[in-house]
Amino acid sequence: MEEQSLQNTAENPTVPNPEEKQEKSTFLSDAAEVLETVFVSVFVVIMLFAYIIRPVTVDGRSMNNTLQDGDRLIMTDFAYHPKYGDIVVVDNKHSYLLSDDGSVRESSGLPDEKRLIKRVIATEGQTVDINFTTGVVSVDGEMLDESSYAYDYTIDTNTTYATVTDEGAFAYPITIPEGYCFVMGDNRKNSTDSRSLFVGLVPEDAILGKAVWRISGSGFGSIYDNIKD
Image (cartoon, rainbow, N blue to C red; front, side, top):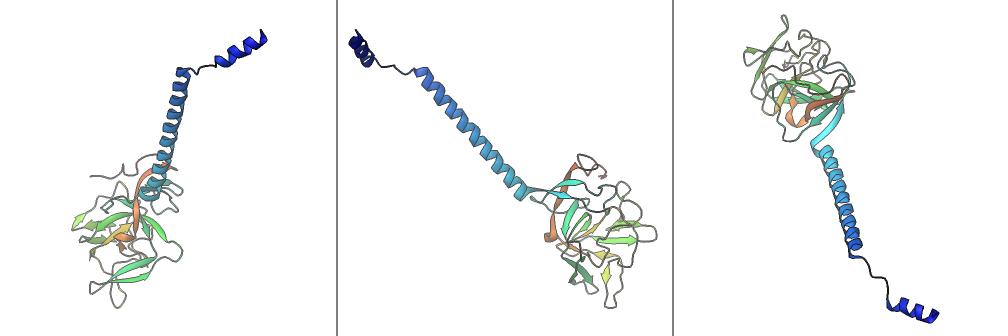
């Protein structure tokens, strides 16, 4: 009897269940899809932050009250071309000054600050004029309404920048050369910007990107709600 039982067992092996095979195959397929989705998502995020958007931190008070010291922002340079009102991050390794013959000459940037965050006031071909008595800024003969973002009046200082003559004097108005911008901080009494010999004109290729969104600090959301069309 024992011999017969062993023979029957050998002659009748267990047959795999087709439903179990299908479930296992489905599980492996689903797991592979999940892993693929995760890897693709991670790759997209890495590429996004490497080439399209980057986080930046505001250091200082030159953009008060629009931005505060310590604010964290998202910046992008994707298909970007500067225009009035944009808040931009600038590489300040060099300053570019306009001589009285209209030529642009390179000078030294700020000694300690290599990157600045400022607002674009004028771009190539536009003429900027500043009345330091009234604090009024005009572009192409039209007074800018800066009441929604400029903090205090636009003042003159010992380092104010405009046209640099052979004698070192400054004179407005100035016309912005091709490929350059004129930028200023919103905190006009506490900003080193295009009025300064250490910043001057900003080449478009020295603009690292446009700040588009605040993600932490003084608030979350758009930083352009105060711009009037």
